[in-house]
Image (cartoon, rainbow, N blue to C red; front, side):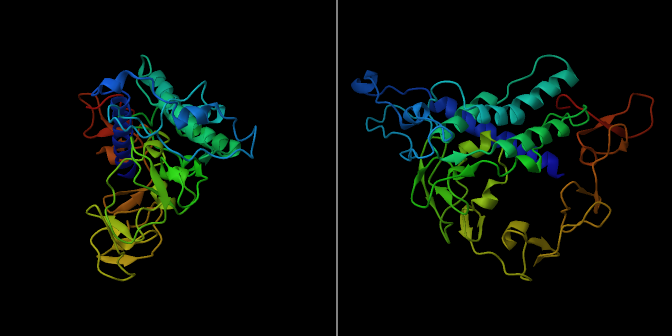
Length: 341
């Protein structure tokens, strides 16, 4: 059930990033100097700098969060942003977070619940003003249109986050070269990873490592901008991450136990690494996987069922399999579900 799995993963990532940010924003006074006035942070300086459209020749701010030698305060990696958010950042974040909340509220009744649009716009604006990432007006526009289409009607509503359309993936483009200070892998140019970065720590743009630890932190900017597939363009390992350590990929045709072991673009089929294309709706599943737009149900790829169609489980539907009214036929019908059962 790819949609449900992605939704749970996204909610965990966003929750982790927001919790760490909120906790980090609270000062921990542990020394007499804790009350002293702090020096302006690089993010505040970056926010005051002109935007890329105003002065393309200006140099990016690569310093990352300021060091705190007294150790009396934890600083979020994306610190305070001065002024209003960048318009393009605000538009993208509204589509990714606030729009689904508004549409769900219209379907279910009541006010829109908590969503991360403001935090998304704040962090993304800091990165844009620092010249660490770029946004395209055309790509953001296509993402907004795709989100609006995907949220049409109410048969997508479930307790999980609304899926992100492909048009919204990969549109936050990094501008920093290898060796530059960074706060997110999204800030690094394609193929590079922000090594050592986390919600409260800056890192360095580096090439994927052959060996060493991996998967130990949350990428704050990727989480709030819903870039769930960012690791494809910014891999942490030359091979793959298994058991928190970078490991070589299993060669084509070699024995495997998981899809990740075969490397990018490959999958584990019948315990062997394969490059076979993912099957479309109507075909047999390939190692439990299907092409985009289909999901594996009882061994065959199927498009999600429309609202009102008969179902036995949530995985068959775009949103949820809702029980029929008492006295009706057995099973359920596909429809919206506003809260967890």
